[in-house]
Image (cartoon, rainbow, N blue to C red; front, side, top):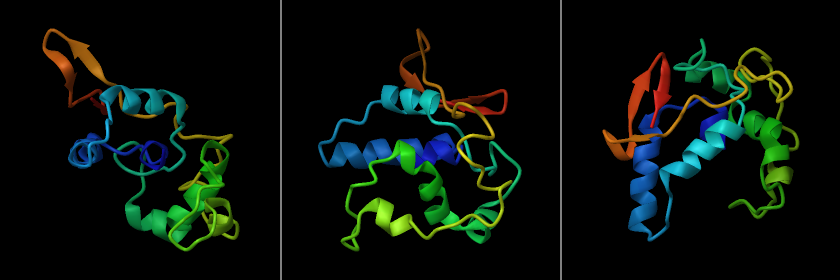
Length: 135
């Protein structure tokens, strides 16, 4: 979800699938497609937006992003600190509403990834088209 809310690129998908495979976990491309279609892009970062990762850090970073995304996440899940996710981000704030947008005002209603299938991409394909990353 965080990757999708960031408008992240395909560069993160291949390693995630590889790591899951090494652990014996099924992580199909179709899941990334589904998440991309149902998760709005709320962080205005390149390649889908205009700001840099440094700007996300100064706007409140991942804690502020997670707090904004909390309605879509499992807030009762425990973190490595022994707190729930909701507890861990309850004090996080965004100092720049153009970098980390509210869920009600996303940069894009859907994520920037789509899984392509067909005779040239029978198992799914990683490519970029029209400024949007495609899987």
